[in-house]
Length: 331
Length: 210
Image (tube, rainbow over all chains, first blue to last red):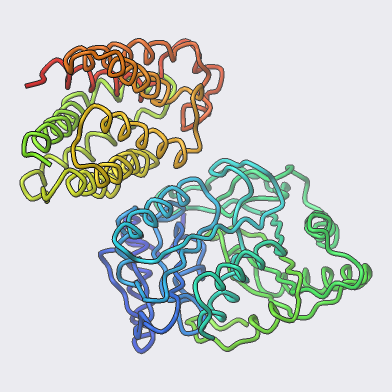
């Protein structure tokens, strides 16, 4: 393993420290709870939007904290749910009279921790709700999941609810928007290589030199099938097809199209995939209203990509277009 | 709320915590048969913290006390055990908040709230080979004894006996939840580690009742 790492146990804290040092005016780091929050937060005039998950998916979610996006993110260790007290303390620190929305990708460990934190902070009198994101069409029940997994599509839920909160929407309205965006967002991914967690020091799963995993999860969970390497256009066909069919998206639909890198794939390859996906959608009468190409939700150093579609309407598109200020600026 | 009642609750929690710490190895060995062997370790670390923090826990009333326990163990116990045990204490605390006296009926309501919380949080139900398969029938038994007019001592003994009987009875079940479910049919033939741990804890609480 060749990685920029000192002590694997300190991988996450050292990353967070670097992030805070690079953004002194906009971010605040609370090391006790792995917490990255807006330096000017919490804003008492708006609903606080918080996301937690394991680390290893950067820029999700610590690098999308900022005005117009998350008010805070409290990650756990690499691929591990944050401990309960991190989430509970984060919720208390971010409490606002307008309430707190906890966004959680649908994994069993995260779900338990966040539901517990919601229950505990509600008992303290904080108005707090939880919204689960489950956009991955690849498989139902998975290694760490009952139901569908939450993956790169969570970016759109975050962007929309954060914009709504910034405009002054109340907690119920923010949740309505989040549920709506989640309900029209679909994703599927593919891995060309496995990823290597710093503390493990070796690849998380075995994937042969000529093999790819169709429908891989962002923690290396198995997808639909192990295939032989094939031309890029054929890969697009195999992961875009199930995404389109699932909602389904069809003739006349206007969509946001995201090609997300999983951490170890150059952006040149992502644009190559984007071109093919865009053309295939056009052939089916689906027009791309907004496009997103880059790294949004990764799996450490995994080579691979995912494709996300969001069905746009006036409301969603308008929220996606609102301004935001975050450490990474890829939209 | 009387001081005696808080003292009883403190006794139950303290004995639970002490047993979890004392039996770390035994619980771990039970879990290693089909699970991942971390049950003993997880419970011991969580309840060790309860014992460490014991003197500083707030004791305004039973509800506050139980809520503090929920907070300590959820923060400390890793994996899914933390939120599960934490939820049980939190739900019991919510019931305690609504009653003036912790009598037999209130204890049944607290146990029911605790097991309902574990069901919801863990997405588990009776028959999934979890501690619920011991705790739910034992709570039913406790309620039967109360209705039949049994003495507090008889109630406690019946509760412990039923927990043990049902914990041992989980041997015939196939694990559907938790890490043990990864071994599926291989789990048949051994009792659920969590259920047996709960039986051992309750037996100790009843045997040493002051």
